[in-house]
Length: 125
Image 1 (cartoon, rainbow, N blue to C red):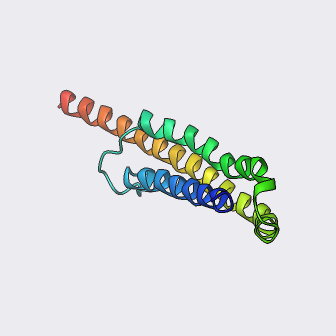
Image 2: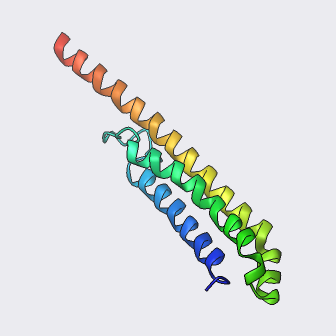
């Protein structure tokens, strides 16, 4: 059980990051300017999920360090070989979360500005 725990935590962290990216994409992070549907601001729950994601991305490596002596030598060798590439993959998805959250916030800001200008235009008519 100790041998697969770091790998399981890594997969869980990756799926968590993918989930956050998917939420931001569904909420309109990459909508085109010609798409006039309203984009909502980034929810607090997504922001909290992103903070949790930071800890989840670190967890597999901390657990590996704690369980190092309980893991078989060949499994340790596999984890050692995959350590840097797996950290790079999680890092890329962590940064992708931040970028998509920023893009969603920027799109939401444009939606709010458009809504205010549209209301003002209708009031003036």
